[in-house]
Length: 458
Image (cartoon, rainbow, N blue to C red; front, side, top):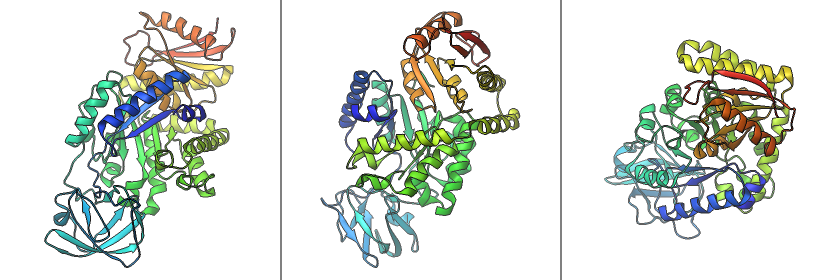
């Protein structure tokens, strides 16, 4: 964990679909210890299982299915083998119809249902491969009777909130109502909620889901099973643009450096995929199996960081900022007055920072909203985010281009600014006399970013 932090890990995702809660709590504690040892603010994301349909565990080493093989599926959780695959979904036989396409994992193995007999589905493999562990089985979301969050999600959520997790991701979101059903307190009193966009319904309800969430994940695995594969690159761009326009971080995920589970370097296509996610405007890119069960997690994170850094160097920052400003201008009628104020101040801060060649943009925010709003514009000027709330500081590790700092909880904005300038000088890499842009609320209880100052570091 310490090495992963050293080479570029900003947020650690705990996949709660695998393993007992006790193991996840141990992982959480170990991550906090590793971050403290490295003196870093590390965001920790608990990824809830959601209504994920999974096969019962396959034998050690898995089973290999060949094209043309006949397989059977039934509801159950005792175990799977080459003769019968059990699935943890009680109404499997009732909800799946003859002719349906069954995708295992992220589509590595595909079968077509040819017949069904009472509680058993009979299918034929059309794309073969290895099935091991507890592979997911994709069922079209409009047929799925389980809703998110599940009772198990809520049980796991309570435990992770109790220990102070920074973010939680909700799987298989279909509407903003699913987000609200989590019942967590608004950030930073509660964790930031990350909505995973992996169903057709979520794409159709995208704007309301983004408004109800703190961040969004483009979960391309199940989304690729739900939608035609040729749509995925375009949906990725659409989702990311909507997130940035709303001031929400966007995470691009799934199979980004898949070949590095076994290989020392990625494919050229994978390197291009990561770079294009940066060009699309992703706030962060995510690794899954590559670091969970891959051969060399540290090398994989180091490689992804290098690709992102190189892509950032080629990013057209000026054109991007103008584009975001135009998008938000078009949406004025859809946002609140406080959000319009924040839009205006952050846009102005970007312009001022360019004109005066500022050394940094200092964003003072209790909730982190000011920092995330500023990050939308992708300024070339470094963003330093200051908050007195520890959870907010950890959450800022998800925001593009932002370096988070824990500040003192002062009673007035001027005292907070003095504290931020001191920290910027002592540990933020700024020197006395540097020009900085400072944005904040006019009081510690302001609900909008409404003040811009041009100052020098003392």
